[in-house]
Length: 341
Length: 130
Image (cartoon, rainbow over all chains, first blue to last red):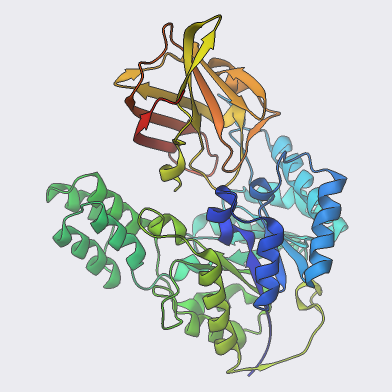
């Protein structure tokens, strides 16, 4: 089959290096360009000092970096700090204003796909949609584990999308919804922290069998597990496994994909997430958008090993190239910004 | 997720004023992957050798701006940036004794999309710097 899928990198992937000041945005964009990941996703609250006050000088430098490396700004991840003030929640109007502020900043950065954090209420996106439409950007709800397209929270969003029928609204699924095997970087860390092997095995086996993890924290506690074992059991309730064909349900509203991953192995595959099937489903569904790397394994290995986000992202893109090359690509200049016909 | 980096080695020192130690301070990072408005930093509590600092005796400084810990809830126009080393100062007449101390930092962050408070604890043996 033919496909129109592009490759990109979320700067989230380099959080370890940004945190420790061992890489700059320019360094990260250079890496992306080198591995052919030309679409750049940014978390402004992570990468822009002084946010939300973003200087013209910063924006100029951002665009200069994109021009220098031949990359393009694509996605902007926003948060919605509904609990900004102690003791009260932001009003509906304040929440809409927060989204509009992010739309304004996204326009300055040239990013057309906005990641609406999963906690964003449907009515907030409903009332911010006309502003986004006017600005020529999209507000894409992040469908993140443990959510899915038939979850009551997401159904509220679907109702709004159906009623409004705005090109500015859609989805940005996170591939962390498709964790088929328990990430071994997490279980191995628990063992390093002294967890009992039998309890680690119980957690991993229950997850890998796609068994019932609801009572797992309790079971591990009843069996004598301490904070480390119970913590691992809690992680098992945070990961989710669904058939990647779930993606087909809302493909017409899917304009960006966050390619979450925990560990690219020496064999060039993701240990937990079946990207071969995911890519095939995206191609089958006619997805026109980006596979945007989101490396999240650093937190599981940083206690004992040097974190090498660059190597991990490089491996993921080698895998994407391999998986996409099984399909014929359709040359295109800007698939992710086109409106649907 | 960044607990390992919360307590910054080499940053525990006494504050000396007019020849007398009046307080101690410690460099602290936030274990989170983005910057956060200070109004959402509910607590940054330092415990040295089992003695927990009083919030009223604690001052929090980022990029040159200092705030009483107890007034952080009102600070909606300043942030603790990703990986930024904040200075936590605790009034402590006489200062800390020379040598290695058992230091614990407990943070509570109000992160809107998380059903439970963020933050967490970090603990380390830290030597007092001159």
